[in-house]
Figure (cartoon, rainbow, N blue to C red):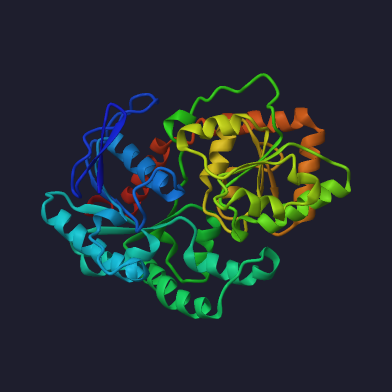
Length: 408
């Protein structure tokens, strides 16, 4: 399904409908002299409430604003017929069929930017007519390996059948996409090095690009008054997000006599389940917001001064970029793309994965040294002013110039 952007308002159209132009809160950008045709796709619903949906629209709209033609391909526009359980097999094939139809109607050679697990049929079947780029948000193979290796520490439940089925289905297709695509886009140096060293993907075929910020996050003013709350965790309440490590860090804070106003937002599960999992000293004072609408995100961030994200696997989390853009000091694990974004001690704090003691100590320092925390928040805010989606689009254009040159 495509989205036509006119005057900043989104409206839906059918697959193949063309984007005319995009309007945001940033300065006009001179279009590229050479116009390209992009198809951005993933087996997800067309939603601006998910990280992947927002990433797809952010990159696609930025490419459109630079004069390129862009179509989106979401699961709703793939014509899936075999049901949810078989979608992971059907979606890659339906994607290739849909892109084939779009390519036949176009006078330009399409560049298909497809989420890692679904790219391989397009890369194989249409390699002479379509340039396929596998989009790696967080390398599926690496993340699965981390998930299995850390399951005892995180509390992740992996059934014996999943340990067989997932590698044979999702991971096999993701690996095939990386091997057959004309290029690979990833969000972290960690993933790039893993794909080169462990999966034998040629380094010249891989580009590390950033995630970007929606225009409304660029230029958010810093508040002069102290925020009303201290700590924010924003994300699904899942083991891979480090919820068990966060709870252990809160227990450590309580043992040391440290208290703070904590908010858990965008968690998903019912409030009672999460509250019962918290240490006793935090149950009454913690604010739990299961769902946050996109238009309410900035208000949620600006109510806090510190972001906590103890994940075990990530790409470049949009929550980190958004929090930094709103002036929060991020305290996050040094996984995925976070070390590419955060200069620890300057505009945030990086802590080791699975280290609840390090997370607790970093949080204590941030709480007890408010001026230092505010300094890092200001630096984070300043850094994020350059993290527009237009910047990401330029990174992509540069990779295409280097990788394909006149051949594209």
